[in-house]
Length: 454
Image (cartoon, rainbow, N blue to C red):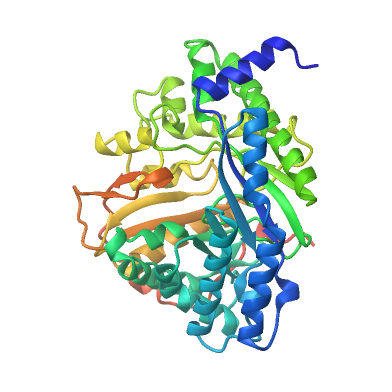
């Protein structure tokens, strides 16, 4: 039974501690839009998205007003486009036309972003996969709201090193194609290992083929609420610290569950999952880094950081799974550098390096996220970073990802401004020793032995 004290505490989280629902994401299957005619395919895609998502934004705004819960983003995810466009698209330019259709549909219904310009190539690439991947730089330069992702590995299949080598080059090309905007295209492109089918967060959202025709996913947030709760138990032992995080995560997730159920009922679309992730913003007081420092670290990056993050991630999940009927997506703690003022400060003071961030990704959600590096970083080095992160996901049976931005024209010591929720980022150094001969070998890295469970 929820008492009035807990209601008041939740209200305080919203009003003073930056608790929000980060996104309502409608997943839409486009499998029934497949057509051998590119013109017909684009028409069917536009018509289905605009028909099903017509009321998504107004309904989100209604729920915000009625319940007083901020809903920061309304988004759409669609079936990976490489699967949808295979029959009609003969070249990368054909896929770009689909990206423009998706962008037009997103603008028509008023959503912030649309994800699913994606390919799933953990074991190999079809011609459609290859064409879509090659089209990504132009597609992201020619659109405003389309997000792209490529899954290059899994625990079950291993790592597709041909795709990983290709993605290093594609990221460099995307950075150049959007150079006038701080290489912003790379902020809308993520490379996964073990990508989930039901992720509501961009840039990695897509509507998995195991999902129904349409579904509503909700992503909650609340780093500020967790930090304020920990301030009240400063210096207490780990048992109390863990209990405090769990209880706070429960309350945060209940808000997401309520919003998800309301949106589902009003839109007539089944409820999918609540993603429990603590997603920070550049705003002061809305930082995962500050939570870790409140636990007793002088700065994120200090010895003990990985242990603190492991604790946070685990307790968030333990509290959240009790609060929602269906939990999924990524669920945990995000550590994007540009979107977290505490992370930015730690980089600037020299406490947080790329290598330490990689170590932290072993125990948290996602991976190397929103990290700006020099524009002249070699494609092979980017591929090596992707391979390292994907290997962590493959071996540990978890989702990992890379969203790295080689900012055209920027060097160490400079800063790139993205604006909005994407924030700003200091340019971080990348190890200068080459891995080119390694990533150029080609083929696949086999799945680990513990993947064999048949």
